[in-house]
Image (cartoon, rainbow, N blue to C red):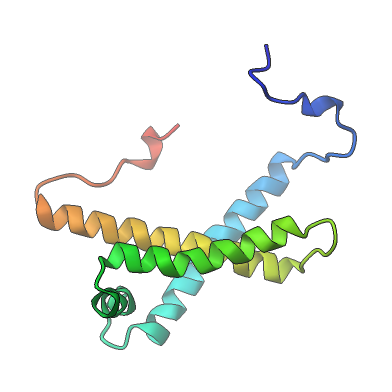
Length: 136
């Protein structure tokens, strides 16, 4: 039973990502997240608050800071969708792929941080972190 999923083993035009290749991509992404978010903090957060621009955008737009972030995130997703849509006609460079995917991942990290901070303020004694070893 395949539950509607195609049997990719029969598709000869698909190459699989090895465990080593995936681990290399993952380790590179984690390092890039740290590097970019640290460097962007100095660039975008004059007050020292990483969420400063989202707070300002929320005030300007009359929405929550999460909604402001999602509005900005949408731009990055549209860019990624454009790359995917036109993949057969033009393929971007590795640095461009890393930048576009990285922008989206970083916005999701910022959103997670923002949401957890709001939850922590609403319920100060709540644990908001699942230990990594318990995630399967």
